[in-house]
Image 1 (cartoon, rainbow, N blue to C red):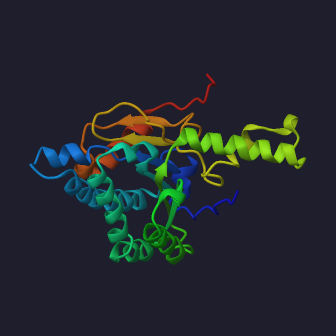
Image 2: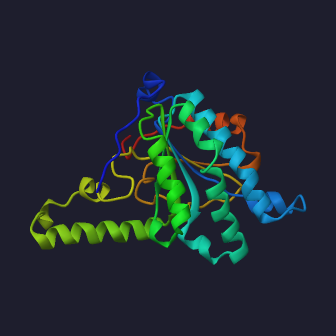
Length: 250
């Protein structure tokens, strides 16, 4: 399992003293409701959500966050209407095949995708590969996009990988630790999220980073994702700063 080299934090002292999360994960929810409330199609809502992605990236950069992970498409999202799924795939091809990647690269953002890419079309995989290759040397922010991702399946795959190592004799069962499991996840090499934000008022984590978010602070925002702004991002950071993180201690 390959690991990811961490970027150089823009505000390492603030990250180190805990006032800024090193890693923020976001469940971008509410595109469909945003669109339907305006008499638009759900596809229009997803398109509007792309602007919110760029605003969140800019806000993370301004705050000195080193890692930002976004839930773009879950393994359960295949259950949505075929037209909506096709539109989402087309949006990936459009967004990551045009100027968006250039803007991210210019800001020092490295892009990485996690999830099961075997179910995605060749052209979608091509634009993902291109985005990763073009930005692979950037070190200011690592933007991870979970696409066709499900955390339970990720854990199953990690268990299978560990079991295969035990079967082959390269690993003893007695030597399996939390670090062993973490090292076989798709997020190997990334720090666990310090803060998980979900928009749209829903209060669940929907099969997203279940292992990794064991000690994340959870912030639920009522704003629909296309309306998510730098001010909403900063409000989540303020709530994070007000929390006492004890990790099981007193």
